[in-house]
Image 1 (cartoon, rainbow, N blue to C red):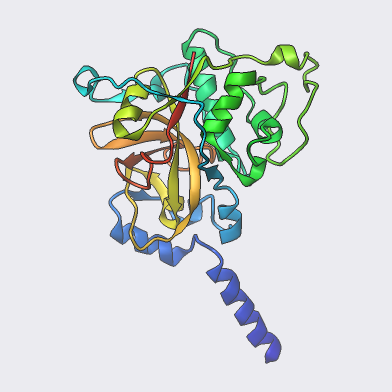
Image 2: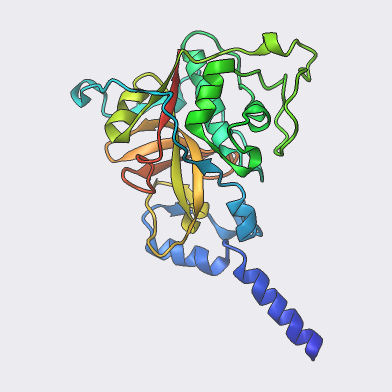
Length: 287
């Protein structure tokens, strides 16, 4: 009997440590306006709270080495922008269980913007930022502005030179593909630009994607499609960095780094004013 009781208590404790449950999925289906992924298809089914929090690595530090964007009058901007439809916008990747979202946000924007400037090197290596940017904390998180300043100073190597391994490893001095390390650094930004608030984000999007951060609540893990708006009964898990690729009349379109099986093929739309997305130091890299 004691063994049975202990087993039931353990099962209850484990269930309480899971954010994706069938009951919560059913609740969201009845209470949110966006489409909820089926419980059986949720990629975070079985993940614990601590595992999910470990992926949310967007930090905000104070750095002055960035210029403010020159705002464009909104009447000269199109009503809809979507860089995901452009060949230079690189495909969705998966950060896995490392809190390297900041590195993916920075490296993906740098990859896209460098391509838009006429030099497509494919994916620039987020692992270099994780391992070599000593001002940030690798898999324990980082600040996107500092990450962009690293790209401005050094550039980044391509993915084949320093493949992503989803963990903290020492900074390399040799390329995995045999090429010379220093010579493999490309796409150093000419300027790092702050895209402050909604108007700044729209102005920056005139030239390409933007690295942004957002608050993540437990309902966000259940997103499938539509315009996400936070269910106020959902609790805060942490802060996450993503790539802003466009906007519509009342939403932002973003690329996530949780793989193409999450959300709308790795993308999501989020309502303007939601989850502090306009306030967490949006930044981009200009060439």
